[in-house]
Length: 290
Ligand SMILES: *[C@@H]1O[C@H](CO)[C@@H](O)[C@H](O)[C@H]1NC(C)=O
Ligand SMILES: *[C@@H]1O[C@H](CO)[C@@H](O)[C@H](O)[C@H]1NC(C)=O
Ligand SMILES: *[C@@H]1O[C@H](CO)[C@@H](O)[C@H](O)[C@H]1NC(C)=O
View 1 (cartoon, rainbow, N blue to C red):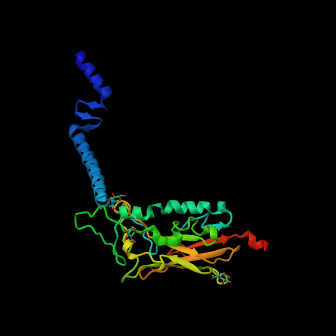
View 2: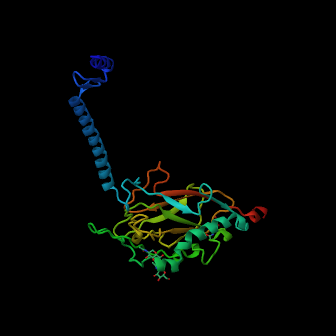
View 3: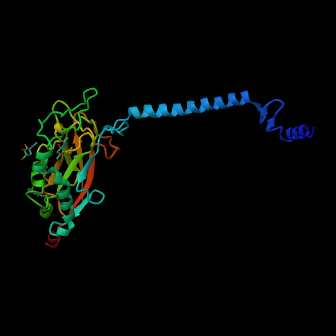
């Protein structure tokens, strides 16, 4: 009897964990536990499944070669080289130190535009038409070829004839590029977009400007751009502006805009859409002394 007593005593003390009379563990029968555990198992498997499925669908929509979400500006911006400090180029022709850094940055920037390098890397394309290289269904047309942009096209602003890019003679060159937008077709009917620069203040005369190439255009053959990974050797087309007769010792605010029959003119309040503004100042000391 003592054994049964002990068992009863034990059962009395540990009832809440294991009740031998009702076969309940922590107040639930094996069946109840089984139901609860299988409910949670199914529930968590379902959540995990949802997660995996969502990720899978997300990844399916991603493409290594084209960004899914692009901040596609209606009107791409323009940028200049050399950029100077805050888009201000101040220098004095007779003081080499004031412009040497600009000339060097242009040298570096234009190195990949050397004709020999372009001939090795890129195609001699048909001008005035888009260089379309679409993927055909499942077959990727990668890597895509790019068109040659020869440095010699920039003539007096190529740094080849005049190593100072005009800075030494007070006739500075500024290179202009149209920011890259994947897939953009910046013109139609064979008309390439072109750059035109003007003084921002009516009373300040910019003097004569020379554009290189002379039509100041970004030829259509450089478009569309397919992205860095798809089009590895892409060479961005440039337009050079040479300020032939700037007024010396005066701040000159210049604005260059891109004109195209497909790019909407930038809204007036968006100071970067389709335009770039910069300041030029050529200081000439002898002129003050005279
Ligand atoms: C670029 O220069 C190379 C070598 O001088 C020439 O063969 C090629 O036709 C030029 N390409 C363009 C687009 O002007
Ligand atoms: C990129 O340029 C290299 C040489 O610089 C050339 O071997 C390669 O074929 C080019 N690739 C494409 C896709 O144009
Ligand atoms: C340069 O500009 C000055 C005044 O701004 C003018 O008198 C002169 O004729 C111009 N020279 C040329 C070559 O355009």
